[in-house]
Length: 294
Picture 1 (cartoon, rainbow, N blue to C red):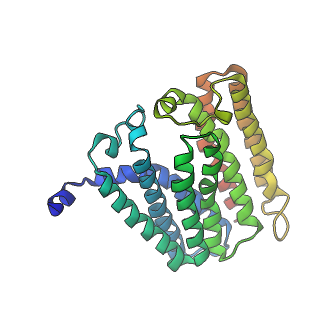
Picture 2 (picture 1 turned 135 degrees about the vertical axis):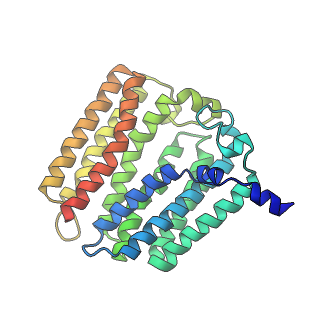
Picture 3 (picture 1 turned 90 degrees about the vertical axis):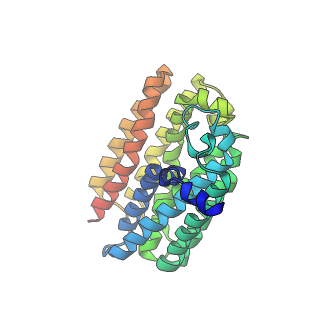
């Protein structure tokens, strides 16, 4: 019966469905965005940003895994997830994802402000209903997925300021552009696995070619001017000062050099450096922006 089934659901499976580690990274960028949006942070607001963001992201990840359960079963890196293994039913995954994402949007909308709620709805819809199905059709899915992926720091800023403006737009642009070298490096390293799942992730649906490698390096290069835009513009003068601006420029050049070495060699070892470097790049740059504000 239903009660015994509910009792059999493992918390571990629900946590895995939500991809808590990935969700925590998303929430980190939202919290850093919050600190950039105010000079007098409120503990309760920060808690709402973290809780609402974690629940919304977790729910989105859950819906994503429901969509992709058959593909996940074909890929090494995902075949042990709760849905492919059968340790969690599709019905339970849908119900849980609906509950947590609704709770997340409600927190953002009613406890922060309606702007945050609207951004949350946009992120959920575009991630689950646009990005997820597009991944199997065309590599343009990565571009579409970059939109919900770039919303967190903007949402955090709007949670603090209560309004849109140039600054949250600049934070959105930075995180939007960052996703291309990040996801394409992952797609290069995991290409065989993605092929097994039928996902088209590399630029222009091409394989591990010289063109693809240099295109990934180009995206890392374009990330530099996008990252330092706040050094030059803002609604009331530049958003960041010289220390943060110069530091961001240096980090951007170093990251591009890593990507260029990968492009010249097409070596998976260097592709992994681009991938792991991206995990360092974003929080460090965002943290520089926050420290500059202090």
